[in-house]
Image (tube, rainbow, N blue to C red):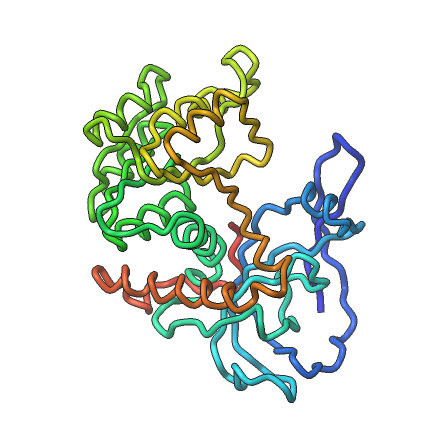
Length: 333
C-alpha cells in the first residue's frame, strides 16, 4: 500500500512529493479508528510551524483532511462503529498520510459526516470551515446585526467565512482582488452588503467601510494578510493589494475584533494606543492550536461538528443533489 509524502529539500530547492510503499498497518489500538479513505484534500504544509514545534522530518505526510468509511474500531472507541461515514483532520504530528487507501486515526480527530454531504465536499471544506468557525465564534463572537469585513472573500476560506457570518445574521463587507473575484462575490446569495474592488489600488478600504457603516466602523475584521511596510518595500503584486495595518485599525469600530492571519504582525505604540482608545482586540488565527493542546479537545470536536451542521443548514436553502457530487478517491486542493 502506497502513501504520498512531501520530501524536504535544501533551502531554495522546490519541494518534491514521493510515493512511499508502506508496510501493513500496526494493529488497531484501543482508541484507534481504521478508516478507508474516500477523499483527501492536499493542502499547504506549514514547514515553518513544524520546525518551530520541533516536528521536522525528512518525509512529511501529505494530505491531512480526509473523509471515509470506518472499517474497524479499537475496544475503547465509543463514538464510532464500523460502516460509519466520518470526516476529520489528521493531527499535526501524524505519521499517517491521508493520501492512502487506509489510515489509522485517534477517534478524537474525527466526527460523523452528514449523510447528504458528499465525500469531496467534506474533505475539501473541513479545514476552512474550522478556521472560519474559530475566527467568528471563538475569537470574535459574531451575532445578528454585527458588521463583518472579510478580506479576499472569493478565496475558499473567505467564501466560507462570508456564508457563516451571514448565517448568523451579520452584515458582510468583502474585498475582491480581481474583476472575476468581484463578479463571483456579487453573485453570492444572500448578497454581500458591499464588495470593495481593490484590484486597481485606487479604492480606500477604510474609507469604504466607514461609509458603509455610517462612520461607526466594522465590528469584526478577518484579514487575509496585511501590509506591514510601505508600498516600495513590498515584493509581490498581491502584497501591494493588501490593506495596511493602519487602515484596519482605522476602520475598526469601538469594541471591534481584528482576526489576523499575519503571524509576524508588528504593532507600534501608536497602533496599540489607537486600539486601546477603541477598546478593540487583536487575535491571531492559528487553526492548528486545537491539535496542539489536548485540553481543548472537546472544543475542537464541537467545532468540527458545528462546522458541518451549519454547512448543512446553509445548503438547505439551495440543496445540492448528492448524486451530482464527484467522488474520486482523492481531492487535490
